[in-house]
Image (cartoon, rainbow, N blue to C red; front, side, top):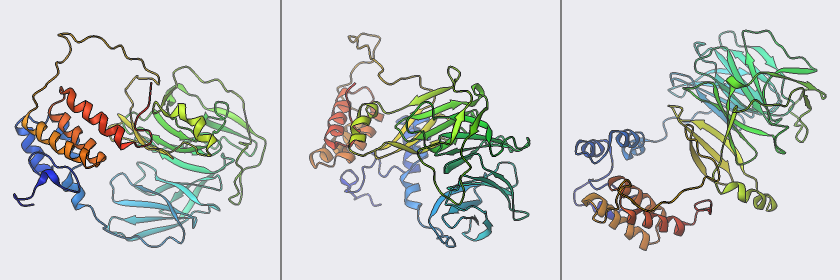
Length: 409
């Protein structure tokens, strides 16, 4: 980048007041107290320098069907992939296939995970045939086959601090817990390892995703065929038994509108689950269903520090929820007159904030509303007490008119 380049009118992306916002620029801004240490850490997680270095490293060829799932080991040196060809392949970080696991699944593989603390020798897989299987790479064999689900098993998840425990989520609305230290407790007539059963509480109990908090491993996040992200505290749950009145799934056939289970105990303890949802979606869900649209949380992930949940809602957008927040849908706000205890509005912007505001205004007038929103956000970081920046950003958000971008409380 040359000094002559007009960084304020880039057609591709807004820039910071001191050039492209790379690591050196961010360090300079922190040095002069233009960024707080917290803001610096946040910006360093996602910089233009990093994006500029991203590119295709390897193309991994070997599967004979669609690849539905991938998972790294703990060190990031091995990658496991599961496919419609009913095989799991393990690749090294140079793109070479090291293992091909003939899983024995008879349906598409939807979930695969390395079992922690196993020297990367044990892999879990789940499939459309409803089974969950544990494979030993050293001996090239399947050591456990679990047949608890009566519908497609969609995801498996492990806890980083436990080499024995893991969980599976299926389209039968069940979360099954597996403990390799115990003998099998299930048979063809019943399952005794049910941790969560959504069937009594929703008309669409199909589970699509599950994640375990990497820091607080007692927390499990679930995504199902509605707009809610559920957060369960498994310390407050106990395993229940459900009686199977239909045989397990076989040969990959789906049984969709019947779980095939009768629960023995449907009472959940108080405080075991929290719900996270964008405020506008519950009001729109009935309207969406009338138009044959559904909101499904197709994937949930925790941040590395366990403080946030990232939820992808099919047919909508991607949302970030604060695990530690106590906010609820329909929260009311008590607006009071300004006083000396509140921050005062700033009418004269700092140099960087004013420059960013001018750039954002240019984007706004050119109807480049996403760029305008982004640039107003940057200006607010430099001058968070300027109401004009919030007002301008609100106007850009409304003009952007993204689905779910605004709603009424």
